[in-house]
Amino acid sequence: MNEKRDLISIEKMVEFDLHLGAKSRLWEPKMAPFLLKEEYKKRHIINLEKTMEHLQNAYSYLYDLSRSGLEIMFVSSKNKIIADIVKESAKRVNVFYITQRWLGGLFTNFRQVNKTLNKLTELDEFLKQENLSQQLTKKEISQLKKKKLKIEKNYDGIKGLTKLPDVLVIFNPVNDLIPILEAKKMDIPVVGIINSNNNPDIVDFSIPANNFSPKSIYLLANLLCDAIAEAVGQETLIAYKEDSLVTIPEHLELLSSSSHGKK
Image 1 (cartoon, rainbow, N blue to C red):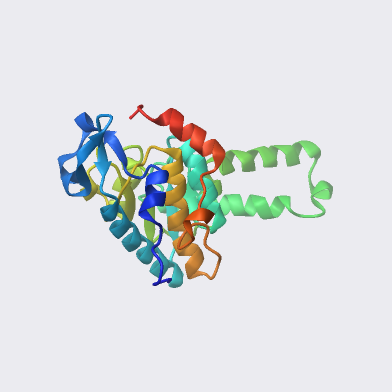
Image 2 (image 1 turned 135 degrees about the vertical axis):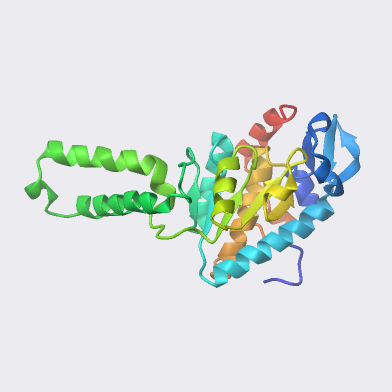
């Protein structure tokens, strides 16, 4: 890993709204060590020096896991805008993800889930055959394609998963509490983005930061994915880059502006 530059500058974290907590009246007292005394528009302000420290720890952890060939899964299953950001970040570095409805029992009943994943793989391979039209009618082929699409709707992000992941990355512990609880039952460590209204004890590796702003999640998701990219020799998108090279996608800037004041 790059030891000469900061992972990301404090200035960039401010630009991407990582410092903005939830409304003060909703705060979680256990988050006190991660908050500044000042407030902004009745919101807590997250201490970005703490964010930097925890983000670097999580980055190093995911980097080491990836170097060892272990499996990482990203989860963001409620807010579609956030989920799409997480999905694109995960796809960039080819890690598993769940950004649709969480599949109850995915971890605790993985044997059954694995059967469905195997069925999806078989369907995929069968439908790729060149002489398929000689084996089945158009109607039968259409039915199989519909069946495949139905399974893919919920399982597409975990195609190829043959065992439980070695770590779970969560972007909102309130929205995705069930995956966290399942992970704990199966002794799967959890990395989580924790806002001022979240309990940091619910995850194993907490990153205190804004977890409701699209541009904040864009920065965090891509930084965590950069740990994986760096581990496998790919170019990073954000990590260790000059500030001038780290920009906010315009559509996320607009979405983030409209989200202020809603949490």
